[in-house]
Amino acid sequence: MISRLVALACAALGGLGGCSDILPGDPVEEQSFAIKDGRPATPDALFGAVAVLDSEGVQECSGVLISPSCVVTAAHCVVLQDEVTGELLAELGPANLRVAAGALDVTDAPPEQTFRIRKVVRHQGFPAPGTIGARELARAEDIALLLLETPVQTMPPVPLVPPEALDDLLDEGVQVVIAGYGARGEPGEPSGALYVGETPFQQRNATEFSAGAPGSPDSCPGDSGGPACLMIAGEPHLLGISVRALGSPAGAECGDGGIYTLAPAYSRWIAENADGEAPVTSGGEAPAAGLGGDPPGGCAVGRAERSRDQRGVGANGALMAGAIAMLVRRSRARR
Image (cartoon, rainbow, N blue to C red; front, side, top):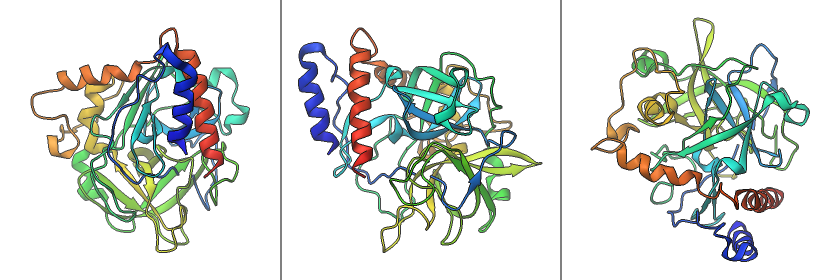
């Protein structure tokens, strides 16, 4: 279990302060995701998808490039949580993560397609209080930003769907393009290659939506944070990011559909936390505090709290990065 492994790592690090990021949290049922029944991506149709790697280059999650220096991914990709309770155990900082952009397979990615991260910004509302059911649309705030040290020139970013266009664009059955570097079937299968597929939109609330159906392409373990796009005038626009399985009575992790964070609902939060790196959605209005925006009173407090995302990147950052990489890999092997 991750909690026991983290405890062992903390004991090994002793007084070095490497576990100062461990914080209490509330349980949320989360799963990682990959594209089942999809097809290999092509260099001219990446849909903004990038791979999120650990410090040793092992693919853990996916993400989406929304500007040359800004990646959106799932918040649960930048933390360690207890597998049973969902308790937040540690936050991953820039020393623990990398991004591969423009690669069709991360196992073959050259150095120029791998990018270091200068800042990790997790939404301050994650993990959400309580437990979220497998088929429940909620307000999980499962979104994070990875701000890169150098801009990506190996692939184009994708813009967000304008928030005011959602009602006109989204009808049940509309095809959504999903992409990710995760598994292509059952959990535990090899991942690291970018696959894409089209799957039907189902329904949404203010901050999440569901897509997919039995027999349609679906996200699976390793696709968390990957894009779900709408095609507008022939160009992909980001509708959301994969966060958890829709689930079924049989407990399938992929094949029945998935739940996605609705990215346009967080356009204000993205703009205010991307250090000027994220493009403003054309005509987009800032969401109210109840729709993924910052709490009343502005974002000064939130930014002060979010500066903690870079803890553990000082003199002991490399040591902690290695310990966390070991924990993540061992946890993945036990899924």
